[in-house]
Image (cartoon, rainbow, N blue to C red; front, side, top):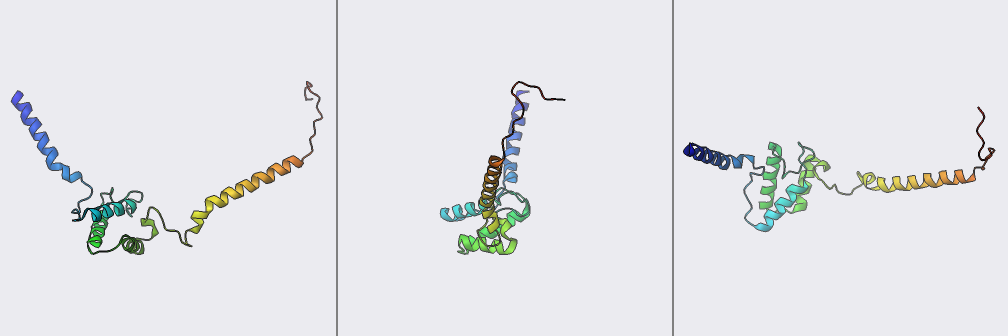
Length: 149
């Protein structure tokens, strides 16, 4: 019986070792230069998977994300800069692919809206307080009296 437990544990260990690569998300081969590998990791973490929508390319396990990771890998090997890679992907998939969108005239309202809303709220609050301050104070009831029903 002790031998059976040892064989079962060995079989479980072998299964865990052999199936571990199946759960890996990024199957692209590592880049030869550690600096390029860091650039690759940085890009895949700051770019959004267009199929998963709120997941980074590095964390997504869908086929499209794997293809995009391989595309980024190949572009880095071809000597493209990070900005060239981002521009290529934005041209292909739109600004949605960027977790941190670029500031331009198309999305300027997104950047300016919080400040404008804060100013509008402050203006409304000042206007309400001034209007209330100008209202006359009328207190016809004497203290301690009950209102008439």
